[in-house]
Every structure is written in C-alpha cells, then in structure tokens.
Length: 480
Length: 38
Image (cartoon, rainbow over all chains, first blue to last red; front, side, top):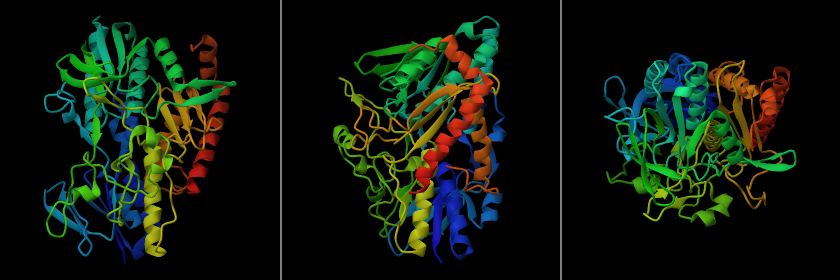
C-alpha cells in the first residue's frame, strides 16, 4: 500500500487530491494536510471585496468531500519535511490544538499556495500596522469590503477620495486579480452614484498595461494584431482610470505610497483607499535530512519555491529561446518522490521582460499560475504519482510553454449589464520556436473579447467549479 | 484603440452575447481537450 501525502488544498492541491482519491481508491492511502479546513474559491474574493458576494458562498468544508473520496484529512500546517530515503515524513502543527502530527509518505505533493509576503514591503497589507487592503485571503477580503463600503459612505457625503489599486512589491504577481478589483470598484462606484468623487489609479510593476505577468497577449482581430496593452488602455480610458506602470512599491505609510520606477525615479503617491497585491514567496517549511541537517537547498530555491524538473539559472534572453526549460512533470530532481504543484513550484524565470533600474532595483512581474494552470499541474502530478504506483513510470507531461489557458477577468458581476474580458492564450509561456511571431503564441488560438457573455462565463465558473471541487457527480468532466 | 458606442452596443446586446457565450465555451473546451491529452 502506497502512502501519498498532499500538502495544501487549493486549486492545485485539491485537484491533485481528488484525482489521487479517485484513481487510487482504498488500496492506497491518500492524506491531505491543510492549514485551512475549507476549500476556498479565491477568484470570487474580488466580488467579496466590493460587497457583491457573501464570503460564505466562496468556501466549503473539505472533510465531508474527502470522507466520500476515501481521503484522510488532517487540519494542520506543515512545518517540516523529512525527505531522505528510508524515513520520509512531514511534521505538521494541528490547527486547533497546536499539537504536532507526523505523517509518513511514499509520495509527497507540495501545493500549499503562496506565503503572502506583506513583510517584503514595509507598511503593506491590513495586518501588523499596515495601511493597505488585500483580497488575497478571505478575512482580508471581508476587511477590504468593510473599508471599501466605509469609503463609499464618505464619497456619498461629498468627499473626494483617491483609490490606488495594483501591485505592492516590485516582484509581485497576480496583476489579473488586482485588475478585476479596480474594474469592479469602478463599476460599483458608478452604480452607487459616487464615481465622480473617486480618482482611480492603477499602479503596477508591469512593463505595460495589460502585461499581466505573461508579457501581454496579442490576438488577430479582423486581420490586424491587437495587443492586450491597447485593449486594456482603451478600457481604462473609457472608465476614467489613470495608470502608472513600470513601478515598484517600496514602502507604504499612512496615506502615502513610496515607489521607484524603471527610470530609477523615486516618488510618492497619496491615497485614501488602496488594495495592493503583495509579493508571493514559498511557504516557510523546514527540510531536514536524516542526520538532522538542513537539506533545503536540495528542495527549494531562495524564495522557498520547490525546485522541479526545469532548467534554472538561465538569463532571461536564453530562457526566452528555450521553452523546454520549463518543467513538465513538476518533480523535484533530488527527491524523485516529491512533486510541487500550483504556485509552490519554482518557475525557471519570469515570462514578462524583467527590468533592473539604475539603482539596482529589480522591477519584474513574477509569472502567474492562475487557477486553470494550477489545476492542470495538480492533475498532471496526481496522474504521474498514480502511474508510478501502478506502472512504475510517469506518462503525463505538460509544460506551461505547451499549456493552453483561459482566463475570465470580471469587469462587473451583474448578469444584466456586467462584463468580463475572456482571454484564451496558447501557450501560457511563449514559444518563439513553434510560433515564430512577435508574441511567440498561436494567433489562431489566442482570443480576447469583452462583453456580458464574459460576465455569464465568470458566474458559471464560480458555480461549476464549486460543483467540481465538491467532487459531485460529473466532476471530472468539468475542466480545470 | 478606442471603445466606441458601437462596441458597447454589441458587448451588451443579449442575443449576440448569447452566441458569444456559446462560442467562448466551445473555444475553451477545445483548449481543454488539448490539455487533457497530456
């Protein structure tokens, strides 16, 4: 009987767990260890953050789902991984009691999601004396909602407020979520009749508007090439949203954001309300060898992301020309029974063009691993572990430089007059060898459009994904 | 590029957007099918 342990129960970890549970059945033991006892549909926290969705609609308890699938669930935060052969186990801290729990494994999937590194920018975030809001956790999204509604009340009384939304660190990712938030704020302010009292600013570390950490996207529109930069700039202009890109936030004080830009200029931007996405890092787990020594260097990189079967250390220009440097099996090269999925794996480099300014500050959008990408990787990892247990060899591989991804970015949740931009891109990481055009992507597949159909898509995604992740009948048919 | 009143009309014209909803779902399912073969 093989023991498979999955750390984390987000898009990647939970997807992996469901496939492992379904394929391995009761012959083998699948255990999920997560510091949250709920599955969280994170994309809908944008709507929680503007008061358009009740928080409880975005979560459900994990244990009943896992009980049905024959999967053991431990509500604990994993603190240590002991990966050396002969005695492989993880040590967690139970959420309710703080008691240590030791779980042995034959195969380990590390998928705990990001550590939200608010500390990487002094003054960032809602906790620990910070001054900005966040939609990166449910408690944060609820707090953001309350602060946003309080700002609405001030604007209804005639106050004019400046709202700054975007990224809060020179190396942040997840620009898509921040974009959804600023647009939903705009739409809500219009509906509340206070838009004229709000100055909205998009502040981000992207090289250009519409970059989203993926070097932007180009599509064929009526025989001409249309870029996401042109498209999103047009949206911002239409909505009266100002923008400042190529900017890394370095510090936040009460009502004041400090930043540095590509040109090395340093400046400040005042604000009354701000939502800035923090830098993501790997979860701070210890990796301990048989002799008690630190073996982290064999498992994770300096930021705590798990090293996998990618080629690391390449310069951006070399990486750009080598799409096969991206991992395909998400397997650690030193411990063949350790896999990483979702945000937890270390990408070989950025997708967007990095920049270091004359002061030595690296302002570089980190590569996003969206819900679909995370789910696909979770599935690939699970199926490979099943292969190893049942056949002795892996048969599933998919690089981000081969993956198709679809993203639906909400631009107002109303099913009557809401909107969303629906993007399909192939591949996620450009491959200039296979697609020798400026964007390195398949212009026959790439797609970008905006309309109320997108709002219906986004609504449908919420409910179908909740169905899928509850492992209800037909869950496997619903795509990641 | 500019978002024109004509663009806004088509973005919210329900019958046309119902068609786009179907097309978008088919595009995404086709993309997913490619992925599931890996």
